[in-house]
Length: 475
Image (cartoon, rainbow, N blue to C red; front, side, top):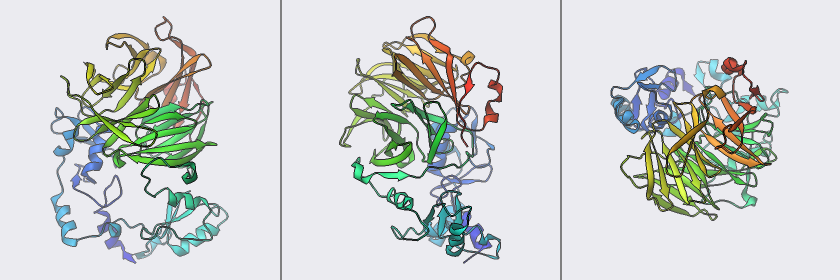
């Protein structure tokens, strides 16, 4: 058993973001303490003009010198050497610091170590309380997972066959697995905790939509009518459709790509590939996958069908390039287009990484190819622009009047003689437009503009008088 005093002391060694033992602790002005890598990655995706919101309490954390690159903002945050000294002095074990305690027994003088976790209601129990939870009418169908990290698997009569899948998915996979090793991921119905931040989205072959909600660390699936179907927890950034209901995700913090088959609207993990570097944007390159990565230098990883990696270094050019947040591939030109929100530029690259052209565009985000043109989401201008192969701006086909606000990800799909454009922004909405040839005078058929609602309906009350139709909501 652990006393309340011991529990509070242990919690002071736990990162407020990853909930793991602190590594190189950084203390924010609001007194929350986080790992250096955790707050670094958080800043890259959530920075504002003068700082960033604390990921725990949402208090504005001002940065002394915002003229420095985003990647260096973390160096302005003081390191907690006092905590480092305590950690070294205690020679603590990470597993002991990050214990979970039974929520039923928590009212007693002593905390009881949790041994089981309910996947459905996200609660922690000791052995006795977990057994009771599994027998109650309201929760007897819930899935209970053991928390013991020292054993690969334990059997329990209360656990269903889905628990096997939950534990098997933790195994290390060095390449894309065969169908015999597929693991079905149990879906979730856990409410979102923060505003959705959709950094990646794509259509499936049947018209369903997959989105990456980085704000809530979820992968969400909507049907072809844009009704919510299922979600799983995963800290991903971008997603691409590989065909045959197979999608690939980038997971920057894991330095890994993950693959899922959406069999009958269930997420089945088919494997993963270690990218060696933090990975962000990805796209198809004919029968291969191209992934934007950040190592000692920014680069593209080309993944073949066997899981092999080939690295293409992004040449520096005249404009500094740091993070390939979004990439797309122009097959007829054999060009890559890469955008970097941190360095505020877009580059066009040959397949060997040489620069064709580069432009300073401070608000470029998602990229896609449509009718031989480059489509570019412009966050500050709130537009989707058409750019030709020489990097020249041609026109905007979507703007604020279409209900778009600070767009992020963009995806295009051709189906039934139509062009569907999927666009996310900084609200809890993902818009689906039907396009004609983007160079025609009227490029967007507004009457066929649909809205995918990804979170709380109250957030979009300001859109109720528009032509758009809210077609789905997430529980």
